[in-house]
Every structure is written in structure tokens, then in C-alpha cells.
Image 1 (spheres, rainbow, N blue to C red):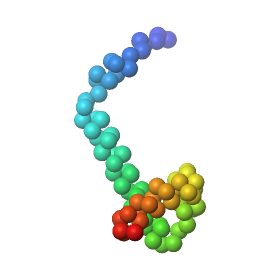
Image 2: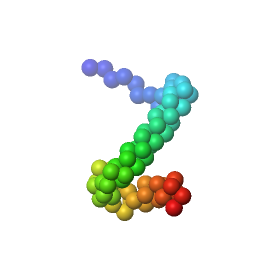
Image 3: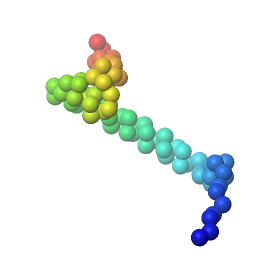
Length: 77
């Protein structure tokens, strides 16, 4: 078995078109917006911060700080 020469990170970067990075950033933005919307929907349905935090892999407090304050600002509170 022959081993193929490893490409340097710089060589790999040079072969990726700039549009791929823009697409990646767009995917992240869309995913973040989708999570924000879903959390707000769950809160409006009465789901607790503990359950939301567990689903997101964070503490209840972290979920509320991240999404509760955002919701409060959006509603002018």
C-alpha cells in the first residue's frame, strides 16, 4: 500500500472557493435563526427553561440568558 502525500492546510485552503466560506456562514446564520424561533415557540407553549437547556446541551440559566433576554428585548420588556 502506498501512502499519498499529505496536503498542507495552506494547499487545502487554496483549493476551496471563497463562495464555500460564504455558504458556510449563511448556513450558520440560518441555523441560529431557526433555533431562536423554535426556542421562542417552546417558551410560548410553556416549556420550561430546564427542558430547553437540556435539549440544547446547556444549563437552564444559560438557556434563559441566551434566549430569554432576547425574547424580552423583542417584546419591549
